Amino acid sequence: MNSMIKKNHKLLKNKILNIFTRFSLSVLIITSFFYTAPIFINFADKNFNNKEFTNNSKNILNKTLNKGKTFKGDDTGMQSGEMDLLYDMLEENDSEINLVRYTTSEINALFKEVKYDLEEVRDTKLVKPVNIGLLPNEIKNIESSKKRKEIFIKIVLPLIVKENNKIRIDRKRLFTILSKNSNTDIEKKWLEKKYKQYGVRQNDLSTLKIRMDEIPVSLAIAQAAKETGWGTSRFALKGNALFGQWTWSGEGLKPKNSKKGEEHKVMKFHNLQLSVRAYLRNLNTHSSYKNLRKARTELRNRNKLLDSIVLSNHLDKYAETGTEYIEVLQKIITQNNLKDFDEARLLPSSKDLESLI
Image 1 (cartoon, one colour):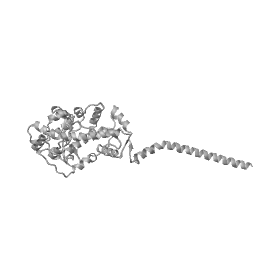
Image 2 (cartoon, rainbow, N blue to C red):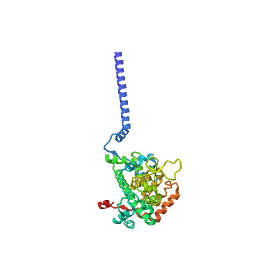
Image 3 (cartoon, rainbow, N blue to C red):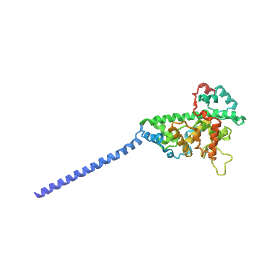
Image 4 (spheres, one colour):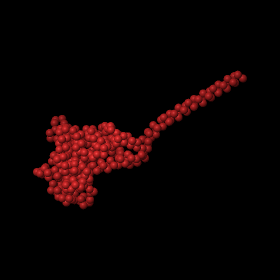
């Protein structure tokens, strides 16, 4: 009898122990599940959900860019190489289409035909969509500096406005994406493309917003004028290089005064439009111009127009002459009243205009 009682007591004790063990294990599993579930859900959203992704960066962007006084994000871009940042332009650079190089008289006749007048542009802020692919060789023979400057500005102005307009459209699309709680496959692919173009890490929307922005037209004209001698340099005429960008890997022209051991070249472009696009990409991505982008963001945050004089103060690293280079740019801007073109917009192209070109 005693042995039966002991046996039953032992069985009861083991049963209670088993129940307690199972209960403890269940608690541990449940606790672990609630602790790890968010991690697995986030991982699954990022890696397995191909239909859309949730955009949670809008609040961060608002603090960092719209309200925040500290400047963060632009230093977090990838250290992308030249080939990565300019991949879309380099593809066009390999074009086998032979462009026609018009003479100055032919270009002036075209401008007259379409009634393209700079004084009218200064007044109306509307630019004729004339796309001249190559500078005329005779530009260096124009004795009148006024006439040489005029034809140079007429050629590069529509190209700069066109590229800025592309950025403006992209920026508007980016803001639309940021205003949504989730994004479509198409929007996601578009963002991936822009991350690559602007040398930004995946999902770093704050840096992308800082970099994807315009450069004042007056600043771009001034730099093109300075770098090419108003369109007369060898690099501009033979390589369509309006901004003197260096390359170590792409096709380019070797500077005649380069020192022994210097391997850089001035990048060549298939046409002037690509040179403008590469210039904007350079200012919007290179670490040397992060202070320019910072100043531009601060102007945006204060709802101010992008001021070429203000932004030019941060281009001391663009040329070896440093602050002297800045002074020259500012003098070109003021003496030629280039700020008149900052709010210029491109008129829609027409079939008549395209046939003339």
